[in-house]
Image (tube, rainbow, N blue to C red; front, side, top):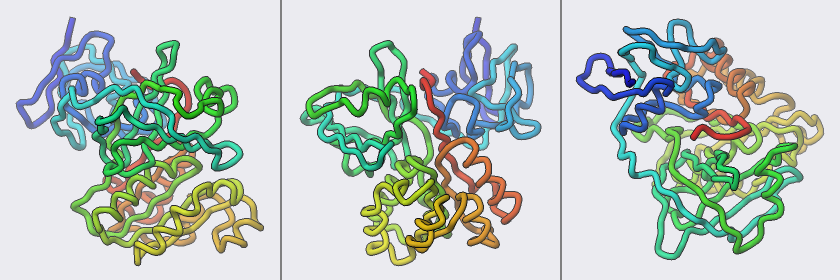
Length: 332
């Protein structure tokens, strides 16, 4: 049995099978709405259900009066009102057998994995999107591309070693010539290119990866906007790719970097902020009206930063864009 899902105010509708969530049904039908984790954690896919009955679990990420479409199972025909949507080609997502070209350790718990696509093949993706790695048992893991889209014969991944993680136990053993099956692109954590206002990028750990893709893409396209990067970590070792930051300082005249470190000595040595990223935002930005915020990291960090930006500093909530890093198997 399938239910009919209609987008309010349009003649667009699509089928959703019993037991299938609304977001997956939309993507299957070539309709993309905002989303990131697909696990009910980030809140990016939240939106109203204007008519019909749905089964929707409770979640701290769910705003009052809205539902997480990635967790929303229709119980009847339904009308929804997503914040945004556009048509995509479901066949645009491709699977590649990529070879490991380089595997280096950037920090004690972070690997930089560079993959090369087969000769003559190029991956099409937007800065900020992610891929899925298929594991031998059929499960998947999601990682953002850290390289800009013009470097489309390679895929750069920043992988934090999660204790007990199935894939992160494999990563240190990967060597040049080993192969991985990857599928991309996923997600819509992308630069809003029509905007010209100041950007605040707040990242924790390897949440740096998609923002690196965004900023490298801006440099390539000659986009000139004031940009502040707040990068959180326990110590200076967490700032595992300082060369990228130094490059942006040279190529982006309105670029500012604030390392937010738990280690007081390291924070002082790097002329940064001693504390959490959300507190760094609180101290350095009395007002965020007119800004766009791009935030990547753990669910707790993203939630804390959103609270500061929207509730305390006047940011338009529609200008807060997040990519939440949730460990474990990816949604198929």
